[in-house]
Amino acid sequence: MTMSGPMTLFQLGQRAMSAQLVRMNAAASNLANAGSVSATEDGAYKPVRAVFAEELDQATGMSSVRVDRVMTSEAAPVRRHEPDHPLADENGDVWVSPVDENEEMVEMLEASRQYRNMVDAVSTAKQLMLETMRMK
Image 1 (cartoon, helix red, strand yellow):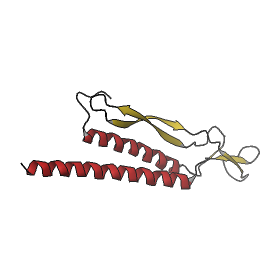
Image 2: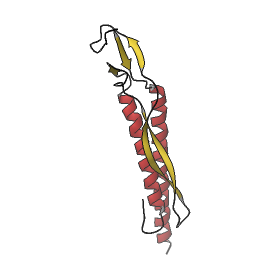
Image 3: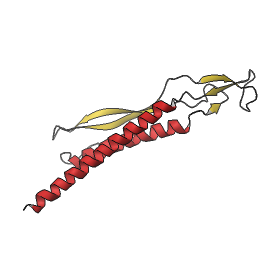
Image 4: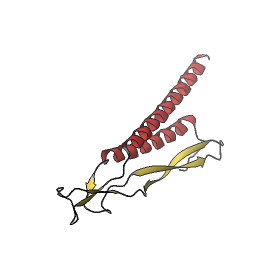
C-alpha cells in the first residue's frame, strides 16, 4: 500500500484490525466446515489460515502488518467408513474435513482479543489527542 505521507497511528490500527478480521473470518470458515463430508479426498474441505507479512513505513520507521495471503492447510482429510452415507464411495468410505474445532476456537478468541486490543489503543490515542487539544 502506498501512502502519500507518513503512516499515522490510526492507519496502523486500521491495518492491524483488518488483519485480525481476516484471521477471524478464516477461523469462522473453518468452524463452519468442521465435520463436513465429501465423496472424494480432493473434494473434502481443507482448513485455511491467514499469513501475515510485516511492512515498514520508511517515513516514520513504524512497522505494520498486512495479510500476505490466505493459504490452504496440507492436512489430509480423514477417511471414515460409513456405507449408509449417501456420499459413500464403492468401498463405503467418506472423507471428513480435518478441522480441529478446539484449535479454531482458540484462533478465533486470540484474533478477537488482538482486534479488541487495537480498538482500545486507538480509542486511547484519540482520547489523549482530544485532551491535548482541550489544554490549549
